[in-house]
Structures are given as C-alpha cells and as structure tokens.
Length: 206
Image (cartoon, rainbow, N blue to C red):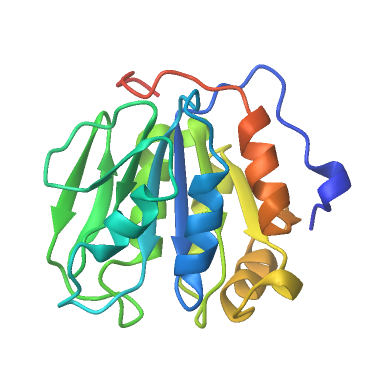
C-alpha cells in the first residue's frame, strides 16, 4: 500500500479520465472533491454514487453548487469531454466506451445499479493507463475489483485513507485488493489530482 509520501505521478503519463466511486457518506466527500478542482482542470471526471433507483437530479445540483466545472448527469451515448464532471444516473449502470458513455439496465451488481465495479472495469478497458480510479467512503466492497482492473491496465489507483472516511469498509476493501493503490486523505487526493498531467479525453485510441 503506497503512503501519501509515495504518491508521485508517473513520468510521461497523461491521464484523460478520473472515475470515482463512493457510497455511504459520499455526498460530503464528493462535494469536497469537486470543490477542489479548479476551472482549468482538463480531465473528464465520472462519479458513481450508490443511490436509490427513484432518486431525482438533486445530486447533480448539489455538486454543481460547489464546482467551477460543468456537472451533468450521464445520458446514453453522451461524449466524454475534458473539463466536465459526469454523474452516473440512478438505476442504470454507467459504462465508459472510447469517447463516450453508455447506459445499461443489466442486473444490479452487489445489489447496486449503478455499480462502481461496472464503471471502473469499462474505464480500464477503454482508457487503460490513462485512467485514474478513486474509491472513497462506503459501506460495502463495490469498486475493489474494478480498481484492481484499472491498476492492472497501468492506470492509477487511489483510495481514501479509511481512517478519514465516514464509512471505512469500501476504502479498506479497495486498499486490500490493490496493493499498489495510493492511500491518502480526501484533501490529499484533491491536491494530488490538481498536479496530475492531463491527456486529451476525446482520443479514441488507447
């Protein structure tokens, strides 16, 4: 497990897409994260928050209140564009394809739809080493397998320090699943993202 002191960017790598998964306690964590990203942030950011299938669009609204970037809810075939924040809609799995998102109504995974693992795994396949995967606070193990796939494809794996999470179960499971994950508190994650070199999200070839 990498400590905050070891959390250095990989030389020569430009990251196009940041995928973030969270559950219990996620609203506060996501609001902190998006508030810390400057208007000049040029990666695309996809957020997967476990929520009830009948949830409205309030999550997007609450995040937009804190963000200098445009926040939108994912629609099927929506392009992945740099400098935008995308929120997975309730009751759909959000998949990352080369250059765009797609939505699926396949069965819930770990009782969740949207599933963090589904989004992470598709991001690993589509963007490979240009992906940053982040697991935040949550009360189950969703995200661990997907984060491992991101790491195995050469992407960067980041986990919130469980000691700082409202619910430590999810980040603890992710840190155990991905030995190379960089583990740091939420404010450290935000600062680290600001320093990462960005690529061009519209590229369609990994």
